[in-house]
Amino acid sequence: MLRRELGLGGAVGVGLGAIIGAGIFVVIGVAAGIAGPALIAGLAVAAGVAICNALSSAELAARYPTSGGTYEYGYELVHPLAGFSAGWMFLTSKLAAGGTVGLGFGFYLSRFFPSLDPRVAGIAAVVLLTGANLLGIRKAGRLNLAIVAVTVSTLVVFVAMGLPHIDVANLAPIDPGAVLPAAALLFFSYTGYARLATLAEEVHEPKVTIPRAIIISLGIAVALYGFVAVVALGTLGAARMGRSDAPLEAAARLFGGTGLAQLIVVGATTAMLGVLLSQILGISRMMLAMSRRGDLPKLLGHIAERNQIPSTAIILTGAIIGLLVAVGTLKLAASAASFTILLYYSITNIAALRMAPEDKRFSPWIARAGLASCLVLALSLDVQTFAIGIGVLAVGVLGRFWLRRK
Image (tube, rainbow, N blue to C red; front, top):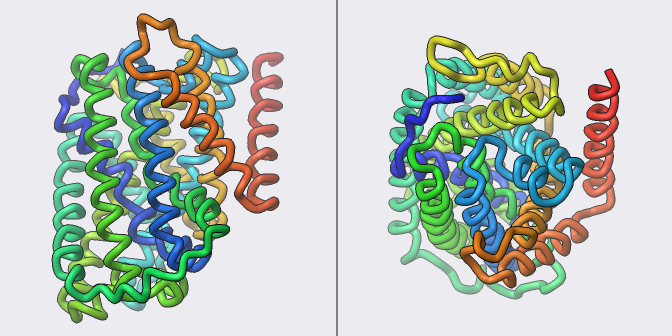
């Protein structure tokens, strides 16, 4: 067993650190290029889907407070193959998202150091945060809280200074056909709260703490994302956002000058660090849970005696994310992450629907709405992304079959 060293504050910090990152600082620009002024509607749809899924996750976490999240829920309530599929999709989506975040960190840091290669900077960040995770959950949690405080403060300043400069002409016209593709791409920006369920063995009173932390962290993120998106789109415009690798920094420079732009760069770099830190936390705990059931090699279930952490899984997680930073592309990583996490939450909602009536905290219509929304958004993605997602899932299922036969 792992040590229980996180309280509600630390858990909310992990949730916010996992959510507020590449989605709002980087992927929002990609989505604006695809959707134009429909960006805001897409963000709202993605938020609605995320809220339904978060409530399903919260009631499941209260009933099954153990590492693994939907991997465990799928095993217990649906079918072992569904549980494995959820775990495998979590790993692939969060690893892909880790690559996106690492690239985003490098792009933003290069604003301060133009001669710095963004990929080199991203890999260096992965190495440092892997080391921080190896120090234990308590120290990693404290570092995360400090990072989150800086990130949220910079976004609040961005919103406060940008609201008076919004040009409402930039918020229209809205193409209804662009809303769902934008929502599918932006959905994964909200889904960091899933990390909390994978840390259930390290949280005090997980049956109470994890559901509360999920709801609080997502509520804060939805409100903050909405204001930031309106300011960025209303001041910079969709076309310029789509052409920029750092859309918030470009918007800040437009209405706040160099000083505000540099402040946003600071917030973006700390946001990427926070997400990377929580990615390594969550992925390594999922590897631990899957190794316990024999769905991944037993070596990944090794617990270091000194500080009770899955050290082998942490090191492997850092190595894979570092490789993705070195060779990945931003749009492909974001799209692949969106597809796999949508299927992951589909299984979450199916598991919530299979819960005993006395264990449920919310109406079954919430899980039904979450399931239907996830499937619709998954089908709205382009054929290439869909095919890559199915291929990744097939590789995982075949690998599981081979591992169990062996």
